[in-house]
Length: 203
Image 1 (cartoon, rainbow, N blue to C red):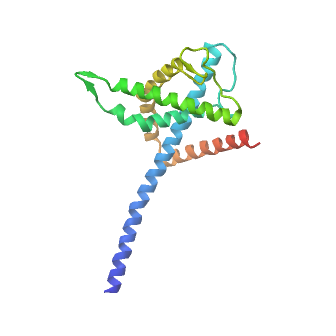
Image 2 (cartoon, one colour):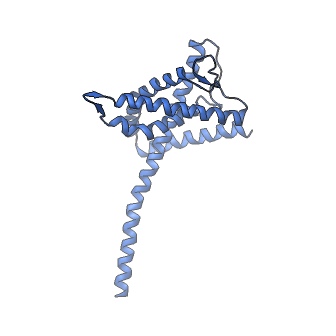
Image 3 (cartoon, helix red, strand yellow):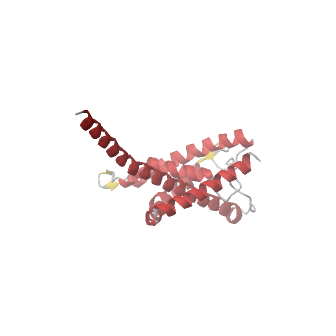
């Protein structure tokens, strides 16, 4: 009887291990996908900032990121936060009477979240670099030049493009990638990012 009980317990542990393996692989895949999104949106944010600086404001080129590489990590962080906070809301159909208001709620959510992230980022940059990379004092309704209504509205519009256009495309892109390709690309980008952090802050 003791041998039978031990055999049953062993089978139970083996079953648990079989269940845990797919779960771990799923978590690893999700982390790889989200890191890839983080890097893609960080690069897009850098391109957006440079475009404004060079072609709109005509100030000339400068690296708009904190790190050496062509990415603004605050955009990557903001994108991941928006996905986690607003993706489910975006998928819902909320109406007042017969009028759908889900896009309006999503827009308001984007404005509030991105403004909070930008404000926090300005304080982090100030504590680590002595200054932050933007100055909104030329805009009305600004707070210490850190945040302002005009950029917040622009972030809201950009966030709508991101959630309703870009993110669905990127989801399809990662879905078509094999797990091995996804892990390899994410790992290479992670190593490059860590090397950049070390180069920027430690050397």
